[in-house]
Amino acid sequence: MTYGETAQWFKQNYPQNPTYTVNFVSPYSNTRIEWLWNNQTRIARIGQYVVSYINYANQSPDKYITQTKSINWGLSSNLDVNCIDISLDYKIDALGGGYLRDKPHTSPYFYTENLENFPAFYYVNNEMIKEIFPLWAKIFLIFALLGICLFFVKRGLRKYRCVTASNYEDICE
Image (tube, rainbow, N blue to C red; front, top):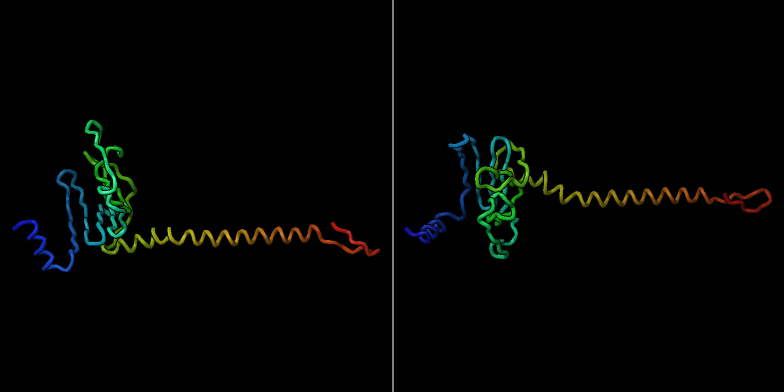
């Protein structure tokens, strides 16, 4: 069976890619890593920490099509300027390190619940805050400016209040 025939059989028998879960234990370090793949995300967790999260729906245009990259084979592969794999935008990228691997670029994220629920949890705790914060900052700024204006208006009225003297001349403080 060719690759094309395999792909055609898969399309005929499955409406979409199924969700895959893989539990892998490294034979070298005995580290256990749990993976979840589906059409929307790829998530990896070591212990209680999500170390890799990719949201496939929020990817930039393919960098292999829009950019070029030169490789200096004399330099270390751990250098950002000499890294080949620049194709995906990670929400969490803490899986790196190790021999011939790029360094981690973010911190791991503590999460002990079902990995299938992680995207919603991450959105509420990170992305939604980024969307709501500018709105709250604007509201705070408006009220702060209003308070400052009222302070100066009230102070200004007190400072230049005129008092009528007994001889009917205005005396201003």
